Image (tube, rainbow, N blue to C red):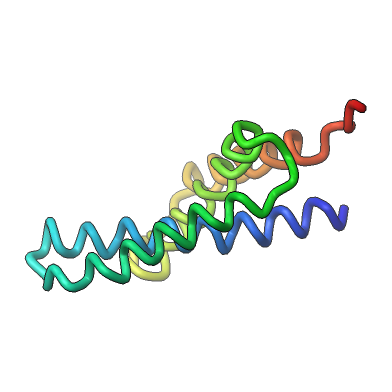
Length: 111
């Protein structure tokens, strides 16, 4: 269970870094904000990439498990930053995605 909490927390921070990078880029491209926002966006993407390397599992497995947490964090961003209420479908989808992440993270280790 501790492994799931550690992985989930690290994935959460990783997802936040990725979403910040995407959001800053979106502000520049879609809302004509200053191109200077691309500098912190690039830093956020670099942080995102580095955080993914902190997991001990194979890279592709890490990416697969990370996807579930990314979905949940993106929906939290939708609610907290964009101010859009989540639907029961959003919550159900996030729950299913997090369950998928847990299955991948908690699988028996083959040695």
